[in-house]
Image (cartoon, rainbow, N blue to C red; front, side, top):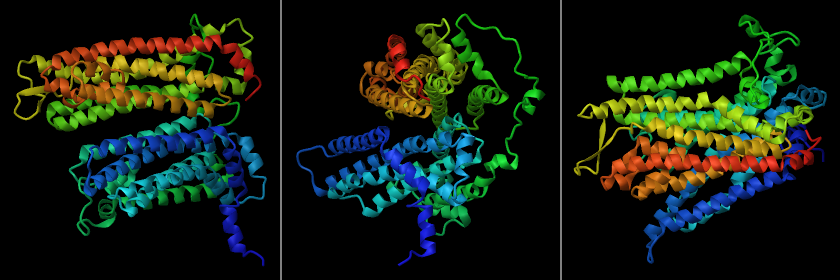
Length: 609
């Protein structure tokens, strides 16, 4: 019996799509995907086990306590799954941008009998398959929490739906960028930074406007949507019928709103991609196009013809990594725009606090998100630069030319390390200046004799702490520079060892997230649980050090309770200096190891692009 034509067409769009089959078949053979799946499940299993042990302490537990322990453990793992999906989805989907960026790939693909919808959906489903596999593979783990009770089955499946919709949205955005033909390999990490920045900004906006009820941000952020799902008592939705229109729908049913909005945006992006894929993407409509061999109009307008005289540093590699990255008005605008807006925002926050336009509590939360957000963006930029620094030169043949010059491996690697850190220093100055502006204002308030901006601790104990430590900027500097240096040297290490840029970026992100997450978690716990020694250990992570500086009564809880804030502040600074010294030794040791193994590694990967 012949298969109906409509069914055959639907199968060609999905399960039997040649592009999807090729992507799934080839990806399933890669060891990197296998290790990602193992790591994903391993992290979820370990976190669930630790959470159950912490929440189910005691020799005798009744059913109510077991149900509460299971519910809390489920919440922890559900949040972790969303976080891992948001981290891994851009890594899997970035291949769509990188591999389809070459115009020759499209020239070959568009000569096949595949329709426009088959090309777009094949790329989407083929890459989305691995993300959905990760989500489904954790279902038995979530089922374990059912044995403890307290976790409705509907909540489990709703959390999965939120994660799937988040993965679908990220995947659709990546495919749309690939089809547009405007995005090259450099857009891969920009796409990653945009996803992370969007989540942080919407989460911060919700925290600032939160009054115990959901906000408009809840329906457009997966973390807030799952918060509304798992904590309906503490993060309440508006009663049915209390609001009207689309706003009412988003505030009354935020989980459904997130799923519907994310799916609708994904469908819209796929529809646009299907229309434009065979006409050259957006470039086929004259968007972003340039004429080969001519200087772009914006370069002619700014008088940049590419022939300006330059002064080369003593180490040409360092000069190339630092000065060479400033080519083009787009890069200059992004870099110096980030610097100008960051410093201006810090100044605006202080002026708003002084004028009463922002409450002291909201000021602290905004300052914390600002500093951590800026540090996160700088770290991601450092990873992107370093992870592509050697692999890119291997792919385009530049490394082969450099190896024929008198430049030695030590000079080559030191030049790259110095050049990239030098390039990033003005960006690191943004959170440092933000912290110094706010900290300087707090210092003047502290020296006034009657401090106005203080926070009472313990209610009635007579202990107060500054609204924000005056030395916040110094702490950010002591911890940010070592962190960025570590990101750069780890990125260089994987860039040297990897065949391509995408693999180097993915490996670097994994290593940095794992190390920074483990150290940050330990530093976070130690800072609040140990007197004096805790703040010193808290300085081993920029996140925990910044939190301790902005929220000293929580980040250095035991020290503050012992009325030893002065000692804790000194310990925090000393810990920052020690941390900087340790990280400097780690960076230099990794660089020395790369120098010793440089020739062997380069020869091993010689000829691979």
